[in-house]
Length: 202
Image (cartoon, rainbow, N blue to C red; front, side, top):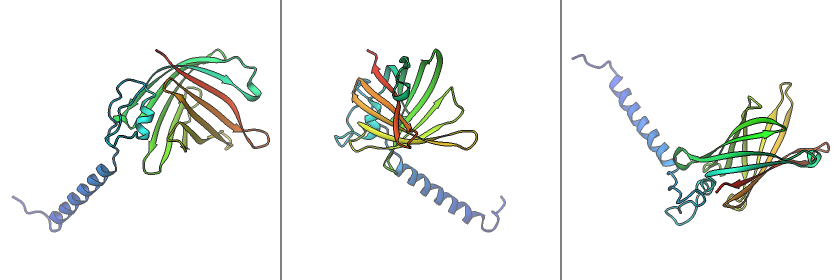
């Protein structure tokens, strides 16, 4: 049997130690899976008797109808309707929304992912639509445990233009939540331009 090249054994040992340390660190930072919800409208309590942000989000799991209303300068437009299915994914760490709408007579599909980053203490979301090849990344804050979250993101144009977009997600109760979109008006002030109401299908 050939002897290992000088220094190889020591390098392999160090590599094993470092790998073990990294794995231990990753496991220590990993958020434990959320307990399964007793039904789509109610998550089971955590081991400490409280509710984690991930469990709060998990209560949205289920099927919804969406009513999209344009407000502000677009308030004369007729409301659009659609459906949404929200599922808990990746061991309870995130929720994923798949929606299908008809806006101005045109079918639109979208995917949204929501989560809470324990390290940054921020709510996070990623929105994708068939109408755009871009991913809208949003980060948010809340002062009431997630009942109202104010998200901020940015959209960009091909010529380098940038628009800051704000989204407020307000949980009315277990069977309804509302997403309101804001963008700067001509005076540079945030103005609501779209409101989507989600109603749980029973």
